[in-house]
Length: 198
Image (cartoon, rainbow, N blue to C red; front, side):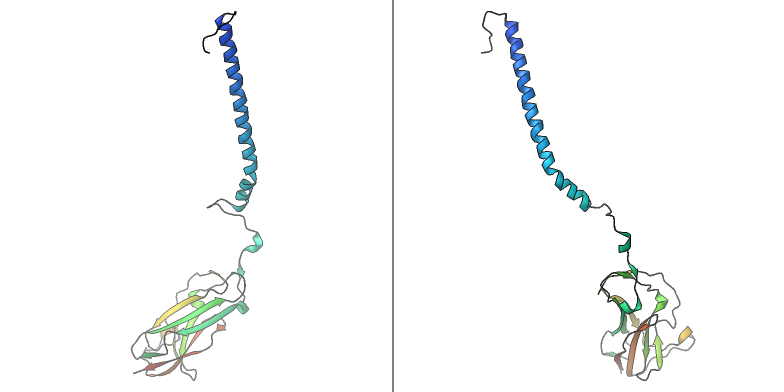
């Protein structure tokens, strides 16, 4: 098979074989290229979808009107919480102010420390203590409030009286009934009662 036989010189037969082999390689290469090209075209829609969805870690364009707006007062709910119904005299009293966005969309709200307050009064409304009486540091807090997700301001009150400006002597509160109220600017929570016992 590999030893050329015939009336022509052997070199002619070798040339013919070389041409035949070359043609076979070209045909096979063309077939492979065609299959690859067809497979590439069939995969293009997936590539377009991936590009539209955005590759992981790359920013995706967002319409300008989708950026959160300021939260109106009517979209805010302010609540006060007491850690338990009763505390002993001298025990630290766990209180909290809770702000919740009740609207269906995220929004921005200024939660500057000086705009938030937890006040303790007697049931008759006499001022006993406030988280802002002896605290005058402003903070820059304008978080995006997600719908229905509360933002808490937890405070451990030492059980001492205070006055605006921290000008009065601070005394231990006696046993009795007290009320906690949370505020955010002009928004006020419902009063939450608790008791201090001996």
